[in-house]
Length: 87
Image 1 (spheres, helix red, strand yellow):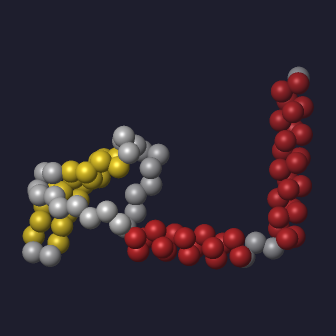
Image 2: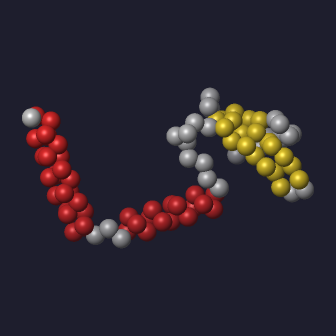
Image 3: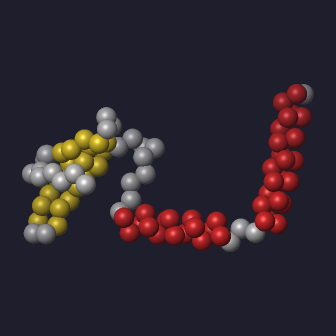
């Protein structure tokens, strides 16, 4: 882990396109601003963990039968798209 000291309005760069700025410091709380491309997801750790847990639960609830049904459906949709594009 890299540990850096920063003051208000100072920042750090992550790669070429992510900037973390110290916006405010009050007591034991630090407010950070994050500038990043829109395609970069930014979450507080507790929210990120909840998303990961929900994704795991969703993946475990999918049965092989449901996957087969989905494959059949996607196969039919692909055939329709191919027929429409060749017309």
